[in-house]
Image (cartoon, rainbow, N blue to C red; front, side, top):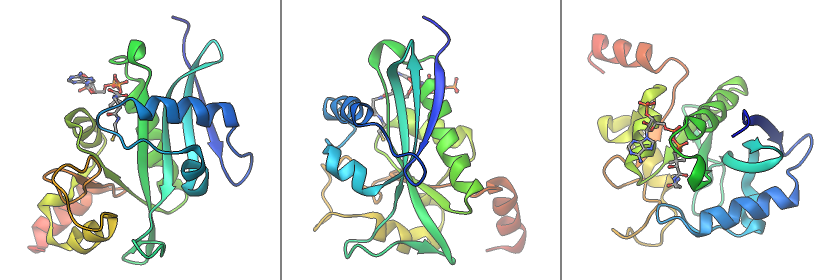
Length: 191
Ligand SMILES: CC(C)(COP(=O)(O)OP(=O)(O)OC[C@H]1O[C@@H](n2cnc3c(N)ncnc32)[C@H](O)[C@@H]1OP(=O)(O)O)[C@@H](O)C(=O)NCCC(=O)NCCS
């Protein structure tokens, strides 16, 4: 394997090439932890994406998507617009080499840079491990996130089979720029 090359794409400034979206939706369509997304749906909601390439061939991706309620309103938490880190996927032969973690972390840091609040929704324990490794907090652990968690659920009725259920145990995650400090502050003040 060559050294993979990382590329970031902003929808606002350059768009994302169609062939990359096709590769991405194909990968998502065959994964049990992901909802098969159409190319139109990805283009409609994506704001930023990171891809890894090996010799110009895409091998990993993760995106930042504007988080919206069932009624299509932009979600906010404590005044900050919420974005979802999602559709993270690595081509099977390239897994376990740190690419998945890197693209997700880049997305979280891009959101912070833009003063947005990143959240994540996943039923995959590998993703939970990755989120925790860069400061993700499970929404299970704090009452203050329960309203946001409800809003992130797009089902008509909560289903235990949903692969993208923020209400499932460890299904919803939130990333503060200084998560550890915030947790320590909350513990200290008994919040
Ligand atoms: C989830 C996914 C993106 C992870 O990508 P990856 O490149 O294989 O993961 P990484 O190599 O970056 O691994 C990051 C961490 O997860 C751990 N990990 C990765 N695969 C693992 C596995 N199969 N079992 C246990 N731990 C695993 C690594 O050990 C590493 O931990 P560390 O940082 O403590 O050493 C990839 O497995 C994938 O594409 N899965 C299918 C699609 C999917 O489910 N996406 C998530 C939708 S929400």
